[in-house]
Image (cartoon, rainbow, N blue to C red; front, side, top):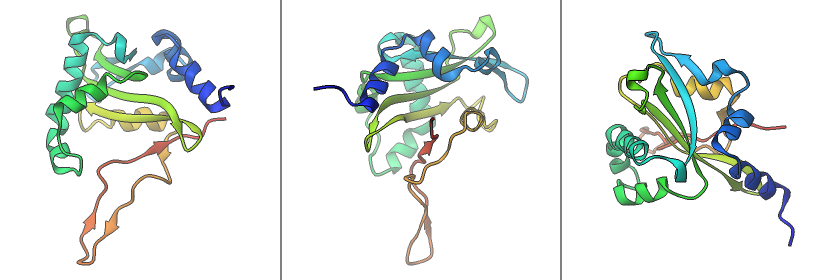
Length: 183
């Protein structure tokens, strides 16, 4: 049986090397892979598949999740389960965008990352973002928002909405779904 067109697109994207993936989907100019914080620190973005992620980078990414979000996970409906999170991080076809300082002294440091998977949802090829984590040193500079807004992402119609409870209290969702229509 022939693969559907959406599945073919997903398979082709997931078969790309890290450098080809960046060339095709992330970069539309060299300047987009390097950027500065509000304090002037220079950063760079690298793409990497889960199976190519070094043990040091995997540990750095997990530490960022633990340090920045384990409390939020504990308070969410899913809870904090480190072993399940590590298993999810190693899933086949999981991609990472790693943000590192440009300085050679800190070049191995992961200052922020985005993990995502290219998959099919409701018969559409989608990029499903699992995690966005930013070190405390880079927080408050709207790096993730600038990254996505620059690429045309907006809050998706399927994103969970705030709900007003009977007592008037507003319950905010645990996450937001962003999307971008592609031609």
